[in-house]
Image 1 (spheres, each protein chain N blue to C red):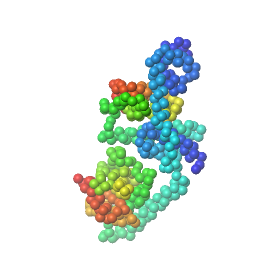
Image 2 (cartoon, each protein chain N blue to C red):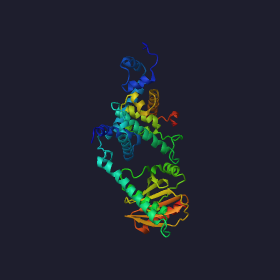
Image 3 (cartoon, each protein chain N blue to C red):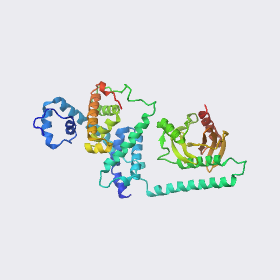
Image 4 (tube, each protein chain N blue to C red):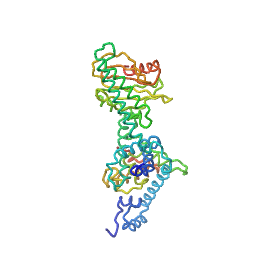
Length: 255
Length: 169
C-alpha cells in the first residue's frame, strides 16, 4: 500500500465511519482526517446518522412480539388445510351429484349457476374467518389488485365500491374456480361484518342477468350472470339486506 | 417448537426493527415481517445450514418489500418521487430531539435502494459483503449507494435542498 496518501478513497471514508476499515489503514486514514476537516465533518455527520437510526428504531427490539408473528402450533398448520381440502372435495362431490341427478330437470337452475353459488359460499366460508390473511392483495393496492385479477381471469374486472352501504373493500384474492381462475373481493363494515363478491368467468353462454338467491348453511348468496362473468355476493346477512348490497354491486358494475 | 423455528424466531426482533425502518407504520411493518416469516418457514429447506441465516431472512424481506414498492408505484394516483416535489424537511429551531424527527423525515426522501443500504449498515451493522448478499448486488454498488445515501441525508438534515436531491428511481 502507498506510504503517502494522495486522496482519501471514498469507500475507505465510509468503512472508517462504520468501523469496517482494514486495521492496517487506520493510522493513515486518521492522519488524513486530522488534516482535512471537511472529510472529518462528514464522518462525524454519518456517525450521527447511525446513532440517530439506533435511537429511533432500537426501541422496537424491546417490544413484545405480536402473537401473529409466532409460528402457530403444528395442529393449526396441518389440520386446517386438510379440512379445507375435505370441505372443497365435499362441495365438488355435491356439485357433481347434483349435476348428475338434475341434468334433465329443466325447472331448477342450471348446474353451472348452482355451483357458482356453492363455490362462492364455500370460498366465503373459508376466507372470511381468516384473521391473518383475509386477502392476498389489500385495498391499498387496488389498482394492482384489479390489474392482476383481470389478467388472470382474462377479461377486465371492476371492483365495486360499496361504501354507500357501509362496506369498505378489504382486498381480494385469486381462487381456483370450475372454469379456471376465479376472484374473490372481500368487504367489511365498521362492526367487522364481512361480505365477499366472488367472480368467475362464465362460459355457459348464459345471458340471463336475473338475481338468484341461494342459502348455504348461514351464508346467503345472491348470484347472477353478466357478460363474461358470473358474480356471487355472499354474506351472513338478512336476505333483504344482502339484496340491497347486491343491487349496489350490480349498479356499480353497470353504470 | 422445533430447532429451526427457534433459529428463525431469534431474528424476529431485528426483522421487526428493519421492517419498521422501511415502512414506519407498525401494522404494515409487521405485515412485512409476517410475510417474510411465512416464506422462510415454507422454504426453510432451501436455506443452507451453516450459511448466514440473518442474511437469508433479510434477503427474503428485501425481495418482498421491493415487490410491494413496485406494486405500489404502479398505482398512478400515488405521489411519485420522480416529480420535483421532494418534501425537504424544514429544519426547526429547537435542537431538542430534533435530529431524530429529522432523520425520520429525511429517510423518506431517499430512494428505497439507498435507504435499504443505509439501514442495513447503519442500523443492522451488517458488513458490506453481507449487505451485497442480502440485496443481490455487487459490493461496489453497495458502496456507491451508501455514499450517495449518506450524503443526501446529510444535506437534507442540514436544510440544504440541493438540486441533486431530485431522486430518480
